[in-house]
Image (tube, rainbow, N blue to C red; front, side):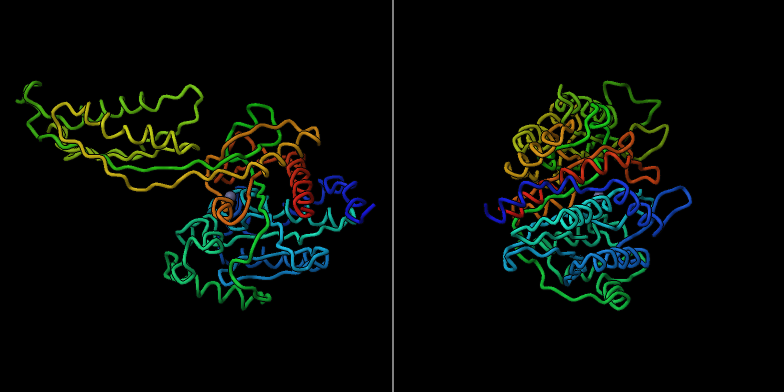
Length: 420
Ligand SMILES: [Zn+2]
């Protein structure tokens, strides 16, 4: 029997420790703790530096190496038996929203770290190195470009562009990063090293797993999104003197358009996300027939075919309900869906099944660092439930048992990938 044959009989999930994983969350939640039980730990802040220091101290105690790259992503590596093999990577982010929760992002980092410790505790040698990464500035709340560290790593955002982004006080990423490195010097690595595979664990941030009584979400895709601006132009007129037949009421027209669009977006599977989040009426006077309405459309779906087909009909549906007004539909943004690698999806599903954990396939409604890394290597994600789906909120909550279940799936997936 080969050395690998011997070790593969042990599964890393057996060495996952729920108490240790939970305690690490408790420790991290102290860094930037808010009065309402959440955290405020924004990218490259004093609290973020403290979190980096804590992670590095835990890594050092286990003999893992800690490095950082030019955009401030932090990597914790457990060596493989083949030093030059491309690493298998896992992780998420340690920064939070200003009124964020104790699990968004940090869970993926701590579940990854727990998987590394489990490999170590079980004495499992892997062929490839396994690396936990804490991506810099995923939230984009201090420096307004979300998933910045992973975007730069994947070459989808230029390093100099990212370094020049400033927070509301005018502090640039470059200067905050220099301060972070001065406070916590770490050996540097080059940007964008090769990755064999990437798997990210995250709380669901939505209510589906809890509602369906499942512990593990096998994430198949991250939905794409399109935004549009719609302008309806009619004619201002006196509210008292103008008969209905003579009006070009931009509001009446806009309301009809929104109703028709809701019909267009109707979906028995409830997968389509359609939102009119801004609706402005001009001139906004009680006794003037509205002459102009501006509104936005946010439309999301995991499948490009649906985005193309229904998105492509928005302008025609709007025009058909113009009622004498002029309607223009302007596309603002178009983010394609990210479809994860079938072999990673299968591995997550099989690992959950082997552990006897109730699971379901599902797309992600929110964006994650994995969408950028998926352009570099086969990638996937594992979701665990969070209470009532509440996230980006200080009340965010998850159970120690569910967090550990996700870490077990992650550990087995990483262990399998690291021997391929
Ligand atoms: Zn997150």
